[in-house]
Length: 95
Image 1 (cartoon, rainbow, N blue to C red):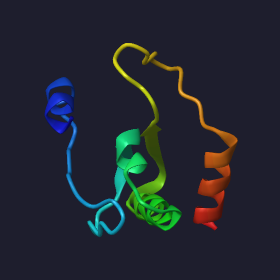
Image 2 (cartoon, helix red, strand yellow):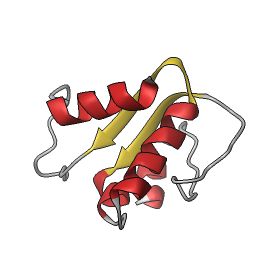
Image 3 (cartoon, helix red, strand yellow):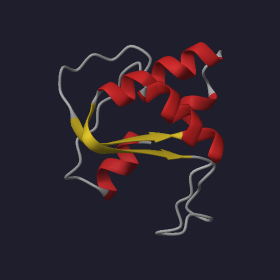
């Protein structure tokens, strides 16, 4: 996946790490996570840890992009939605 993405977006920086505990000591304008990264987590605690570390690595007003269930066949540019459940989770984590 990283190889394919780096061919499509060579200007982006790609980092392969455990997203539950990453400590880069660097903040990013945007963080992208594919659904597959979240789907393989074994517990809600793991998911919460992953979302918390993502939040901690974003610059103020940074963007976290979580792509869920998208493939090249069904992806539509500028058709991004966020569920109410994810909004609540982000609000809880940021408080």
